[in-house]
Image 1 (cartoon, rainbow, N blue to C red):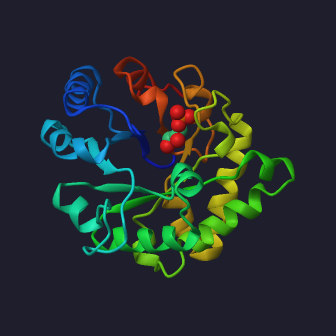
Image 2: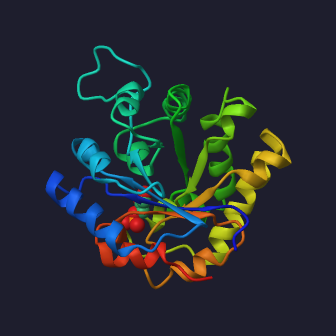
Image 3: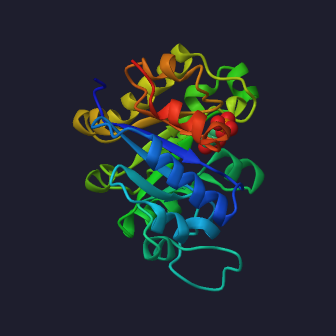
Length: 253
Ligand code: 13P
């Protein structure tokens, strides 16, 4: 049994129509055995949130959004607010995903505003951190992760920090088929836990779930989940098919 309850999160990115999303959820619920020690979160595109919410019939499957703005409302064409996510029944929001940071120019400051806004609405942020290949190659991994974590959590009090989930997603492993070796992921996860202990305290550091993301597949899930500080996964490509996602959620340790 893992020290913390496992969270396996599906980040569908810009995939699936409403019908495809609902079919997936129905199929998943039929096939996935209920397990005390693990929960699932599904983050469909915004357009499918309501339909997926209605299709979810199990209390071990949660709903999340892939991003949001930090304001509740206003002249922000194309944006969706934390209030709106709360309104449609989201329990989670992925914040600061590397695609948001590197394709859409999100800064640590924007990520921090989003984390606080999401917490303010009672949702749980999944704060994503992770270094680029060139940063890893020059030995900058810990500095980058440390900065993203510190800046992302700036002004987040001890009580609220309890509801934060961290996802370590090395940018070089996302969508590339190149997974971090389990020991490489473990090393950064342990570092993140150490930082949480510095920023808050040991109690918080030992309770916060730290997920790994980046080319997670059925054939590498068991070895990743065997690491003590990997408390779950944020899965992109392999979360799009029920077969592979079921296998991932059913990891064996
Ligand atoms: P892949 O699993 O497709 O590499 O994507 C990972 C990811 O970005 C999850 O948020």
